[in-house]
Structures are given as C-alpha cells and as structure tokens.
Amino acid sequence: MTLLLFAKVSTVLLVLFFALVPLAAWLERRQGAFAQDRIGASRASIATATFGGLLQPMADALKLLGKERVVPRGADRILYTLAPILTVVPVITMVSLIPFGARYRFGQSDVSLVVADIDAGVLIFFALSALSGLGYVLAGWSSNSDRALIGSVRAGAQTISCQMAMALSLAPMLVVYGTLRFSDMGLVQDRVIALTDLAKCLNVAPLPSWADLLSLPAWGILLNPVAFATFMLCAMASSRRPPFDLSAAGSEISGGHAVEYSGSAQGLFQLTHIVQLLVVAGLVTSVFLGGSALPWLSQEQIVHAVARFYGEGFATGLCLLVHVASFLVKLFGVVALQVVLRGSMPRLRDDQLMDWLWKGVMPLAALNLFVTAFVLVIMDRMAW
Amino acid sequence: MSAETLLFDALATAAVFSALIMVVVARTAVAVATALLACLAALSGVLVLLGAELVGIVQLLVQAGAVTVLLLMIFLLVGAEGETPPAIGRAGTTLRLIGCLAAAGLAVAVIGVAPVEAPMTAALDPASSGHRPMGLALFRHHALALQILSLLLLSAVVGSMTLALRRKTS
Image 1 (tube, rainbow over the protein chains, first blue to last red):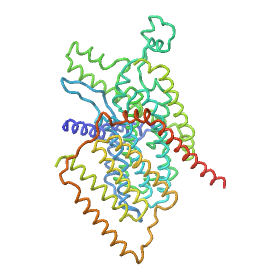
Image 2 (cartoon, rainbow over the protein chains, first blue to last red; image 1 turned 90 degrees about the horizontal axis):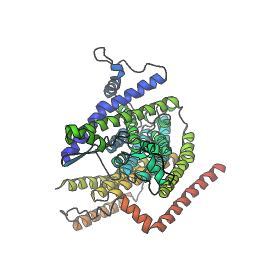
Image 3 (cartoon, rainbow over the protein chains, first blue to last red; image 1 turned 90 degrees about the vertical axis):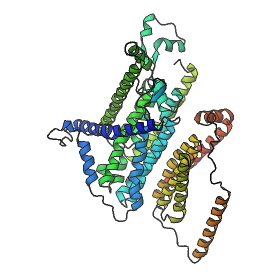
Image 4 (cartoon, rainbow over the protein chains, first blue to last red; image 1 turned 60 degrees about the vertical axis):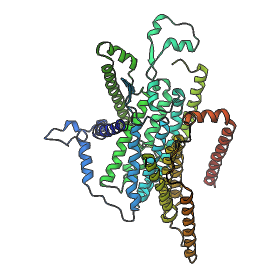
C-alpha cells in the first residue's frame, strides 16, 4: 500500500514537472503569441533543433535557477523566503486530488489513478487554494516595496472573494453528484442520459422508437452549463489568471507581489502560475467534462468489448490507457480555452472584479443552486 | 514508536513552537499572523490523526485559510502590520519572572499527568464521522439551530455593510 502510494506520488510529480508543466507553458506562450500575431518563444534548441519552442520553458527554468537572488533592503527575510514556498506547495499538493483516470480492477486488486482519493476532496481543494493565496499576501508585504504591497492587498481581497464565489458555483454540482470526492464525480458522469428516460421522468407522451438512439453523455457541462461558466471563471480568478491578474499586473504595478523577487524564487512564482493553470483545467475536466470517461462509451462497454478477444486483464489495461489519453486531451483543451480567454479579454480593475464577483456571480450561483435543488426534488432525482 | 506517534510528536511540537513564536518572539502583526497560520495548520494535522478528518479539513479551510487571510488583510488595510509592541518598562523583569514560573508550572502539570506510552485511540466511529452523517444530523436534528445561526451571520453581514456605507456617505 505504501509502495503503491509512493509509486503514484513519484509518477505524478515526474509527469507533472517534466511533461505537463513544460507543455502547458509552451502552449500558453505559443498560443498567446499567435493570438497577437507573433511567433512566440522559439529560440531554445538542442543542436539547432527547436522542436517548435518546446524546449523554451526548460531553458527559462534553468536560467532562473542560475540567477542571483537579490533580497531588498528592509525586507523581512524569513517571510520573504517563506512566501514563494507557501504559494507553490499547496498548488502542487492540489494535483494529488485530480483523478487522471477511473478505478480499474486487475485480478484481486483495485487501482485508482488519483494520489489522494479523499472523501472530502472538494473541501481540501478550497483549503489549499486559500493557503496559496496567503503566500501572495506575505510576498507583497515582506518585500518592503510599495507596488508589492498594492499587489498583496489586491491578492488578499481577490482570495477572499473568489473562495466564496467558487464554493457557491460548485455547490450545484455537489448536489447533482451527491459526493465531495472528485473520482466519484467522474464515475457518475460515465453514463448516458437517454431521451426516453428524460421523457419518462417528465411524464410526457411516449416517444417514437427511434428516440431510443438519442442520448447525451451525463457530463456536468450539459447538466448545468451555468455552474460550468461560473466555476470556470471563478477558478481562473482564484488562480490569478489573466484577465484576473490584477495582483501581478505587469503593465500597472510592475509585477505586483513578485516585483522584488528574482532567481529561483521568481521561478517558483512562475511555476505556481503554470501549475494553477493545470489544476483549474484538471478540476473543470473532472467535474464538468466527464473526467476520463469517453462520451457514449462507458468503461464496462470498453472492457467487455475488448475482453472477448484479448482477456480481461489486457482489456482493463487498454481501457486505463484510453482513459488517461482522454483525460489529457480534455485537460489541454481547457488549458487552451484559458489561454484564449487570457488573450481576448482586457484586465479587470479591482473594483470591477469585486463588483462582478459579489454582485454578479454570487447571486447567480445561489440562484443556480436553488433551481438545481428544486429541479432534482421535482424530478425525484431523475433516473441515473 | 509508530509512525502515527512520530507524526503527532512533530505536529504537536510545531504547534507549540509556532504558538511561542506568535506570543513571545514575533515583533510585527504579520509575523504573528504567520505563526498563527502555522499553529492552526499543525492543529488541523493533529485532528486528522485523531480520526476527525472533516473537522481537521474544515479547521484548515476556515481558520488557517479564511480567518488568517482576513486578519492579514485587516493588518494591511489598517496599517498595523509594521507596528512594534510598546516597551514593557520597569515591570518587565517581574512580568518575565511570573511568565517563566507559570510556564514551568504548566510543564510540570502536563508531564506529571500525561502517560508516556499511551496508545493513540481513534475514538470516532468512521460510520458516524464525515460530511454525510454530519450533514444529515444538522438538517434533521439541529435544523432550528442552523437557521438561527444563519440569521446571526446574515445580521453580521448586513451590519458590516451598513457601517461601511455609513462611513462612505459621511
């Protein structure tokens, strides 16, 4: 059990740092550049092979590790050193909550592709998100710089507002799925809603026989698109992704909370930025895009179809690989969506963000929660 | 010594040391808030070790996450983040002596009554702990208390908004 956990943690960390983070950083820089009619970073190469700029994130990380760390005069050294660590550790820990696949049975043992399959995973996500926000506040204050202090105050206000908005946005899906565990949400979405079942729940007249073919995957984005939209935007705001990066507005307060950081500490903030991009994408995929499930093709159907020819062990292993690939495709799709939103919307002012969150998103999310609960009660938890 | 006992020792030591830093060593309000964060995080770890996972997670979420952020924001906005505590003056030596005696007495009392090799027992039944039983208990048996508490929170929110608007208009 301990060995399995160690293997999972090691695999996730290796894949995260050597595959997912460089790919996400490359996607953000390249796609963002294309949106602005630029080529983007593409100079880093190995023997003249640039691989389309894929080596640039690695080159940037090596450069930052080699740069000198300059501590400003008057900075609180202990908190100045602690702040980037407090920012990055909770965000990396959040990756352990993301289910990269479903649960698979190999003989007598069950394998799940999530490091921390905790019963209250949603609560831990919110707790870690709040802790990460603290790091930004401490970074700005401890730097002994005016602009950094402005950035940290904005970061604190943003953290408080976004936490509540995110919780209210996600609550309808918790009501629909009936669980706080991210892996269970993926399992619930691994099915289809047939039109005939919907008609039965609504007590409408019997549908013709061809209606049996019409069905939709039971994904969260189709069940509750309002929750998807609000949670996606609130999660981007919580992770300080543009256009919600007012705490680190480069053109306004010269980098905000991280303005006085250099070298490896600056690298940690940039790592946090990319890992938050992946965490938001992973959670949106798990809650709203069916997790690792394929549309209209459940895990049982895949295993049953392949097991007839190659045995159950091979079928389960193939299903595992297909699910992981499906999850990664969806993950990077959401990453691309975040980059598109970054490139197409101007930065919000702090008063605009507060207005939008407190007066727009929260009432809408509360109303959505009420309507969702009302519909579920009326339809008597429509057939799953 | 089991891994659980070692982990408990580490978390308890971290909680005590961070509380000492918060109360004795820290010179600025932000340092106090950071030490408080460390103390609360260690305590939430102890709660998880004792089997109260939901309480530990909520402790981390509410106390360490929300309350500490709010404290820090208040310090930054009010401008108290850099203030150093006032000098104690002539009574300093007497106060320090009283504090040391009290700490020594507390240490003797704790060491005297705490068994050294007491096994850690998970007193909570897994079937009765967790968010589902707690939710069912709250909404079935304590619904009235929940509604009264929500009214209290609503009055606090409305009161703070009224005060803020009054300050703005004046």
